[in-house]
Length: 144
Image (cartoon, rainbow, N blue to C red; front, side):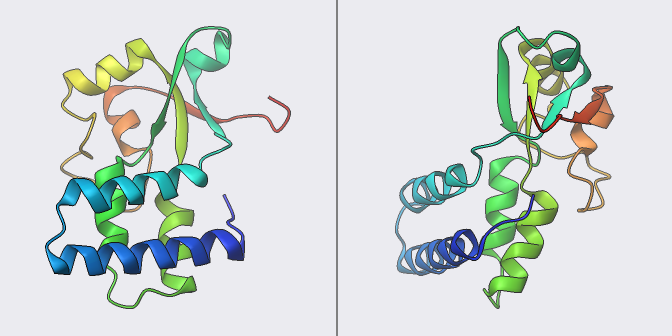
């Protein structure tokens, strides 16, 4: 997904604000909630779906961070040089939302991959958790 300059500039401000709050000792739950709301603004359109969702689009689904929120947040918060290029690189690579079924979500939980990436994750493939538990992911058609 490509983000607009407005989105990137918003995230730069959020990251810098949260880094400042973290340095001041503000509780994580406070600045992390702010961070989550900002990321949610970028998630209006999910473009990936599991094979199960693709085959049965009328079932109840979960829109979930393909790379768990905490990992994405920490990667962005760890940036030393917070600029358009560094922020957009991480967002374009790792900020993906995927529709999965409740059963597939349970598979992730059973494998303890609901909030973690696999131990052998290379830091690049955002779909590594799904691959580890046998969930096939597809790009959703534009008109879905």
